[in-house]
Image 1 (cartoon, chains in turn yellow, orange):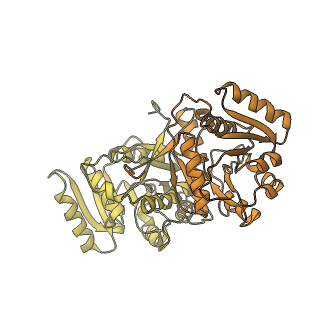
Image 2 (cartoon, helix red, strand yellow; image 1 turned 135 degrees about the vertical axis):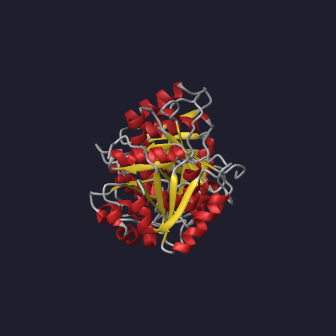
Image 3 (cartoon, chains in turn purple, orange; image 1 turned 90 degrees about the horizontal axis):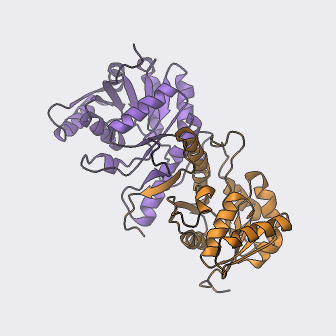
Length: 226
Length: 226
């Protein structure tokens, strides 16, 4: 394996959910081979077929059970509900060793999803600790509205805040952010993900109070930084 | 006291610091009577005199010890360093009863200010608990760069995230946000301030990595919401 090897195949575990589906669509559109991972193979197949209809004939989007999807991929994306985050990751752990895992999980606790949780730290730190140092975990995409991802003609006015302890993992997240048509910003270590995870609750609070479908954030004051 | 009474006088405790000074400048420019509060009367006087030089002759900006400043004001703003937050507020508590206190404090712990703290909650919740229900505390302005506030000719590209349990306190923060030439968004209860407080560390991380002086944030996807 060579460090400059390009990413070819991305597994999106929880790719049948709204956020995972939206990211899968954008990456397949950008030319990556995407595998929708799910607990239910038939449901994953249905999602893949639905996404294929929105894409050109050359786009490659397949489906598999989560473990199979992770085994086939260069990069694995975890986009399952918070309650399933740790279990799903631990079930596929053998397929994650030596790879980058992008965690998209938001620790929303229904029904009060507009109130930030009081974590003992970020959810992604807990995940990294559970998986151990052989898996390089990076946190990203928590604040991007699934509503906007689903529409390929829509320019998304939301930046991606990337937190990582591992530099290679951060760089992979930056590549996939740009491939999805978004601007990514490296925001420090995994610890800082407690802010990006919690920010989703504030955006939901804004959606509700101001009656908008998908508030997002942009980093400002950075002209010329990229 | 009448609920529609306009705010006339604002005390900025810690008004000799960079963030407090910037806010005081903007509010005096907008026509409010601003009192720079400090622990040292002479230093507060010097700050007030320096700010007066940047303002028109009709602007009203005075100086006082923190307690005197709070007593004279309709609204009190706490802009001291994190280490002095609780002590300063408790010292002036008698002058805060029945008023709105806008807390600008960011729980930065030097030297690692680019790493978000692990709070048992937001710093402002701890403050509200210490002051009791007779003081209505609202959290705001944590993410606005002092660098940008200081320049009256500069249009600030940073929104203000406002967290409050008390509706009147939130409305006061919205009024003073707009008076400072900024756009404010109500982001839910004080609990959610753990995100806005921590976000400052992420913006500092961005400033350092991308070598920019004052990264900020804008809320997007909200066209027509105001």
